[in-house]
Length: 256
Image (cartoon, rainbow, N blue to C red; front, side, top):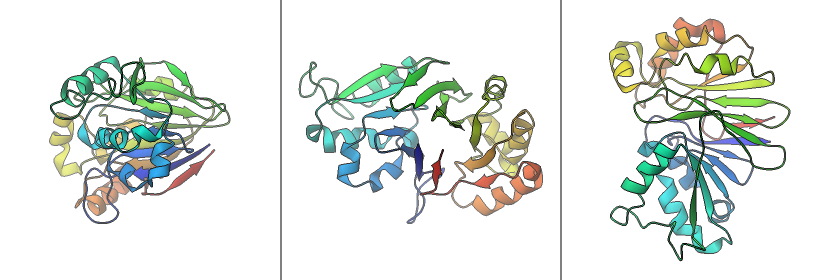
């Protein structure tokens, strides 16, 4: 299994800041932020599944445009996996004909470009070739999940957007083949109150969460806010340096 990071920033700006998305092999996305826009059309058309962590714009904004761009090039619907509550939000506020057409009805309901597939917390989806994706608990301001991506040999855990999350760690600590952990830290320590209010994390909160991890894993930090990256990473080193977290990079590749 190969995972390529298409975007991992908490905002946009310049040539390297793309919002959250990762590509699994050639046919799966986890989240679909602005990083998806860099894929050539043939690669967009090859995407069969999108697993959404939550409904915020920086994680879903490329889905409507991608479907509109390559829907007619495909022979089957793009399958979007998300919590039922997230699907309801997307139906009501994005694919509602007012913001964007309802591609679950286009060109016909029987042969649509898009199909929603609910996933529930703890549920595992087998996407073929030994690859399994499991929805993990997240704690955010809207319904949200993280994901365990299991190749059959090793696992990568992506927390999605979350704050303090006691429900996550007993599950992660039972993943015997855990190799990588990607965890968010959006704000610096001066903005801890904002992190708590918006249900994100800052470096001091990251350290508190990583203290609950009982397995060895390579740890990567995602979702840093533009303009605060150097300060936040410096504070992460001060608060959580014993866990050796590294900053996730755009176009970084994980093979496992």
